[in-house]
Length: 315
Image 1 (tube, one colour):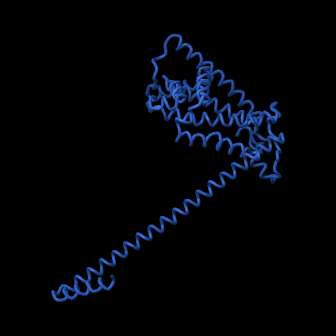
Image 2 (cartoon, rainbow, N blue to C red):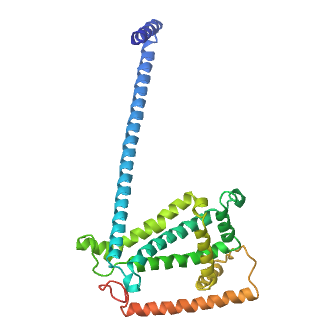
Image 3 (tube, rainbow, N blue to C red):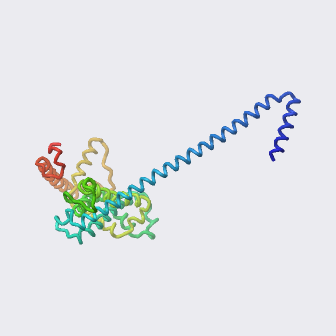
């Protein structure tokens, strides 16, 4: 094969020499061969660079996944050990170990359900309900309830209070008491993970929030196709209907007036009894919020909170 090509090039060169165009053609041929070689070299170098970068990124991702899982597993072991040895605030709150541990996990899973459930309900708004009416009947019940009128706004409002309440109860079960130490930890490790609550933060965020949100974004129909989510939707709407959080609507109305943009609504304007009930709950909510703020500020200035002793009350 190589000899054949070589002979053919020689014949061409002889003919070009006879015609007097040998020099230019020969130069052009050599230049084309050089450019082709350079292009191939550049392409190979780019592929090698891409492969090296891909391996680097994959290795970095593997390191992040590994240390994140290790930290989460360590945090779970630390908190469970603290609960078993009664070094958490659960006994102080009248919760025996046998009740505190299962309650801790039920509350954590419930938190994950409503965190992911909100994303699913919001994401399914533009999807025609007849497309999943047969395959996901409970999801249909959830979306019909949450998407009716302004219920989505009401659900988000009530759900937020429910989230804060669940996190508060989870902390009541699993927060470590001062000086807690388990698993023969070094004192500084125990102080970071138990004393400062890093273990509880990692458990709550990883299991009770982000994992559920990421999965729900990919599996919206399946995620809320259960009666637990339907019950959580009713509970969230009931919390909003109680009027406890109606002061947020006053802020919404104020922003609307300042910006000159009307508040979007899928329901007719309030009138009569509905209007009176709405403003009555706004006033009640403002009163509760004002009282809560006064109590909290009084405790802060008197140093009756869990803020670090080195931080002055004013700060």
